[in-house]
Amino acid sequence: MTPDFHHLISGSRLRLRGKSAFFATLLLHAEFVPSREVLAVGTDGERVYVNPEVAASLPPDVLDGLLLHEVLHAALSHVQRRGPREKKRWNRAADLIVNGMVAAAGLPTPPQNGRDEHLEKLSVEEVYTALEGQAEGEGDEAGEDLLDGPPSDAPPKGSKSGPQAARQWQQALAQARSVDAMSGGKGDDPLGAHRELARLSPARLDWRAQLWRFLARTPVDFGGFDRRFVGRGLYLEALDDESLTALVAVDTSGSVDDQAVRALVGEVQGVLGAYPHVKAILYYADTEAYGPYDLRPGDAIPAPVGGGGTDFRPIFGLADTHEPDVLIYLTDGYGDFPEKAPGMPTLWVVPPGGLEDEGFPFGDVLRLGE
Image (cartoon, rainbow, N blue to C red; front, side, top):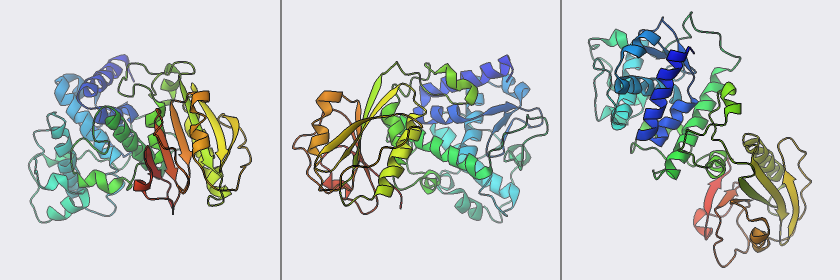
């Protein structure tokens, strides 16, 4: 990006931060590319293309709404989901969806794109069906921003596939919800019951996104980026040296199999790899605690130890020794809990068939997929 183009994008990100942590997080995940071939903005589902001359001519709030409009198209996989449907009608349906969200953020929507307060709460597939037989509106050509591929003047993309891009946007949505929750929002979406968002999100948050919520300090303060990650396109918050300690406990009683144990610890290692200043301490546990093991990205996972009954109290008794900022416990939930809730946040990660949520007396409960 040229300095002037970079300044325009950075200014929009900063302004969105003051309006919504949810939307600001999505913009941080977007890759904006200048292109004079697009009328104003467009997306191929992976990157967002912006005409630099048009962007420079717009009032700040109009630019903010335009960029958010396009990022939402990408995040909601509107390009990939079209399939064999008629392109113009699909674009109109998708525009109705995202314009409702942009308006809810207090930003202007393109004047050529109308609003429908009923349709904009539906999924894009439902809106597409509802628009069947309706005449195209004036100015529809200007709204054809869902691209079949990158403009010819855009730099080449990497080797990332369409499914990979969709997964990355799903992770971005999960992180946006986590950030919104920590900033006082609902933690699902800041706009109310939008079926389009609900359709793409799992019944529960991906527990890795929840770990991110615990491990990232000051998640709505986007002024403290760790500059080592900027070149990789990752806008992660800078963390103080050894600023966070995670105590990771894995239930190795007879009811949790070794495959689930190794899968969880491997995933936790992957999360920790993005946060070089996090100190993680691993224990295995049944009726006793086995460890500690320092958990570092890339290290071999220690062989599980245990196999007896389940008692959670020995692990919570270690809190005074390690003083963790968060305790992450993988378990099926069938065991003896402490009488009092600990002073630290607790995340229970429960495999299929585990105890129901209401059976956990404290902490947040997240489910591993089948």
